[in-house]
Amino acid sequence: MNDAGLTVRGLRVSFGGSRGMFGRGGRPAVAAVAGVDLDVAAGEIVAVVGESGSGKTTVARCVVGLVTPDDGTLSYDDVPLGSTRSRPPAIQRAIQMVFQDPRSSLNPRMTAGAIVREAWQAHPAAAPSGDQDAAVRNLLAEVGLDASVAGRRPSALSGGQCQRVSIARALALRPRLLVCDEAVSALDVSVQAQILRLLSDVRRDHGLSMLFISHDLGVVRQIADRVVVMRSGEVVEQAPAEDLFTRPTHPYTRALLDAALDLEGAAS
Ligand SMILES: Nc1ncnc2c1ncn2[C@@H]1O[C@H](COP(=O)(O)OP(=O)(O)OP(=O)(O)O)[C@@H](O)[C@H]1O
Ligand SMILES: [Mg+2]
Image 1: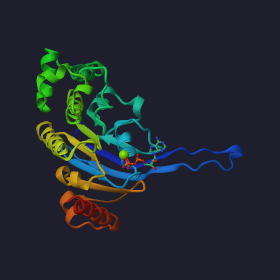
Image 2 (image 1 turned 45 degrees about the vertical axis):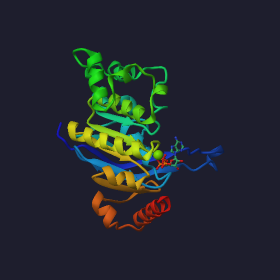
Image 3 (image 1 turned 120 degrees about the vertical axis):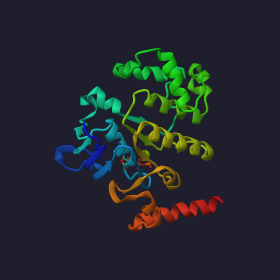
């Protein structure tokens, strides 16, 4: 393995086409992703932004193997990713996802400690050789949670705490790439800032890469090294974050930035 990171080429996904009776009529397929190329280098945080329905989540779901593309290739460190079921366990482990709604993405009947430990049942190769309880406590500490959280269920935790548990569960598998789909969108602004700081620390300490999906440009500016702008299933612009925010070249990017500024203005 080298450290090429994630490479996506010519990704295409459409949903819901039907042929209709006798091959006539029917519904046309919706092209959710219409030929996307993107890269996430080792240790890099790449954000994907764009309005609702632009295809961001569909790209994320292809990367983690929840959606099988119609066309295109995905690889990590030059190893082809393949579709969900054919992914080798080592690849499944290497790419972990953090979802938008921290509470509904955690099993409500399990304690936080059991949720983290369950990751090792699914992937025994990643299980610690020694004391698992101690390993769970270390992971919880790493994401800023007290050891007492291990015994609590998601309903007894705040949204921010739940998202920390999701991140601990992902880290339990020692991933190379974390795919975060609107991972802070459901949180209050002050909690958002804490989780963004945690994700930055995690990247620094583990040398992880991140594909960070968000519709919120203010959030993206706080965390991304590079930004990919999507519109109607296509990439319209990609640039280092600083360049994109100070010198956007595509009119759609400018419109997105203006809309975000208007929102900020209206809020203050
Ligand atoms: N499972 C599905 N079945 C049918 N259509 C879908 C499905 N998932 C997504 N789509 C459609 O694909 C397009 C892209 O959706 P996607 O969820 O990827 O956008 P998004 O950029 O993540 O939007 P949002 O910001 O609202 O999360 C939309 O037109 C959506 O309606
Ligand atoms: Mg989405």
